[in-house]
Image (cartoon, rainbow, N blue to C red; front, side, top):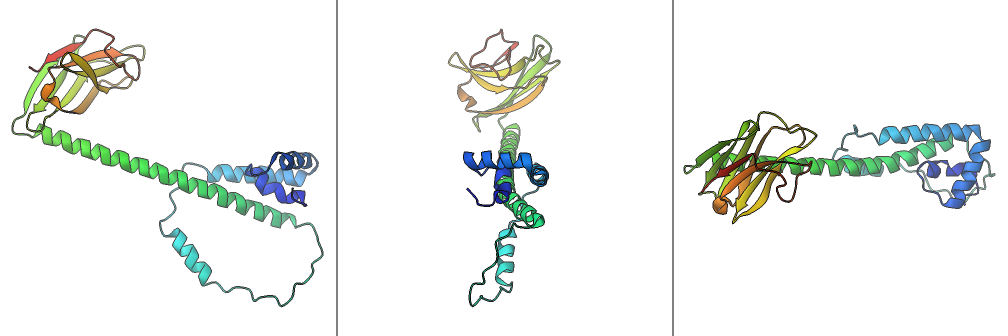
Length: 244
């Protein structure tokens, strides 16, 4: 454990102390109003630094920092160690040191989280663009055929297929959403076996889904299912559109 209990302030805020150090510092906090105030300030700073509104650090930030360090004049070496009387660090210095530790630790974590978020958003955007391009290719195919059927509760389901692409686009436009938080689910049927072709979210009434491998599909159906859908249809088909 640190000889100066005050030096544990930054590590305590970051939860980087062992059980003995934590117990000792919390006993100290009960007696030291100054450390209690600094602890509260640093926790507030950590919360602000971890806020999701922070942007991703610029890609060249690390290189710029390293270049600045190499160009900064360093202190000359000391010929002999000079003994310095031990004394308690000034409160402002402790606050600065602990704050720096919080900034480095929390800032690094924020950068990692933000980078992961950006990667997820980029992947989702690329996936959406690919799906949009695929839908456009099917809908503009020279051999496109379109079939449509009315839903028993109002609305319609439309299937546009292209044997050339061996794919189809299923489009749902319902007049109203299912009640009690239930959702619409689309199905393709091949060889008498239904397979999910998309699940809407509660309150959603319109949907378009690209489906690959439509050459063996004989039917497209729509049912009402619990939230997140079902592995197999659990209700009567609101529409059962025959493709063959």
